[in-house]
Image (cartoon, rainbow, N blue to C red; front, side, top):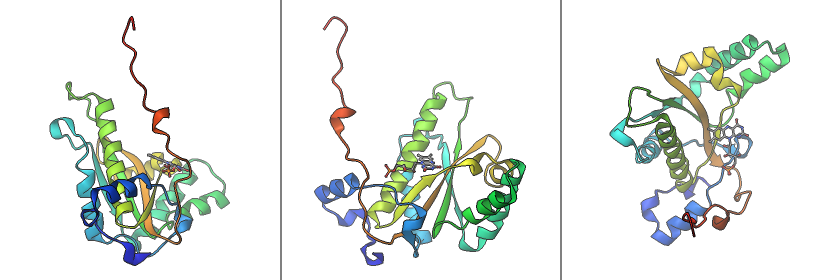
Length: 202
Ligand SMILES: Cc1cc2nc3c(=O)[nH]c(=O)nc-3n(C[C@H](O)[C@H](O)[C@H](O)COP(=O)(O)O)c2cc1C
């Protein structure tokens, strides 16, 4: 599937819409190398930054974990699991989880409470929209990806290694080349999520 990687501007608008309608998560077991290159990741982050961002607060950023850093991340995962009081076998499993997927990026959010015109809900929606654009960009380039959080994002040793003051580790994005073609698990029924408003008295 590697040579199916391509940038969305090469697609006609109808093809682009069809490709977006096909976006779905691909889990780590279904992903192989290569992971997106640095340039492709930067391109996807550029799309993420098109998320609607009231006052340009940029309430999220991405942090790439390099292949050679997985052991160090594993140590933090293991330490986090140890601090949660998990037994040795679970601690080992947590350590191994740091090696899941060919590519790994953390999504870090920053909700500012000192912006009266931009309530926190707007900032979190912006971060979510950024994540969606990021996933769509990878999908359109032919990569598979999945957002995963699990307990590790709240583990102090992990959080402290990724977040600055006032930030939250929102999730991991695992990405790579799909081993085989897959499809969305559920059909999307727009009429289940699009209603007509009934005005008072109607
Ligand atoms: C911020 C965030 C964190 C998530 N964390 C997990 C997780 O820890 N475990 C999991 O199975 N799914 C998690 N998901 C859901 C999956 O990423 C995925 O969206 C879900 O399996 C549905 O698949 P779909 O994207 O193809 O609809 C998370 C989603 C988001 C947005």
